[in-house]
Length: 99
Image (cartoon, rainbow, N blue to C red; front, side, top):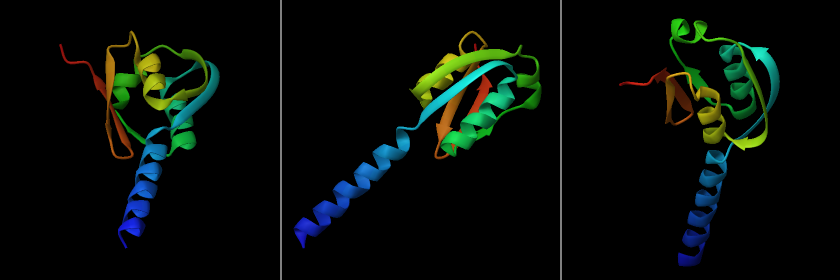
């Protein structure tokens, strides 16, 4: 019984770690950041929450990544835009950096 409990625990940890290790592959030129976030949502299943006005003001983005971990991709995408993100479950909140 103890062995079965241990094996179930190990399997649950493996599934949990795999879900957090989402990767992104995107190759795009001059796209709105909202379109890029939609591509990420389709690849990962994560939902994005943001203020439309905040993202409409941004210039189009050119980005090319292959199998990049989701947190690294978001850091790259939001770099130099005065934006940050917060991950909560399967939701990612994009917000302005508070100074």
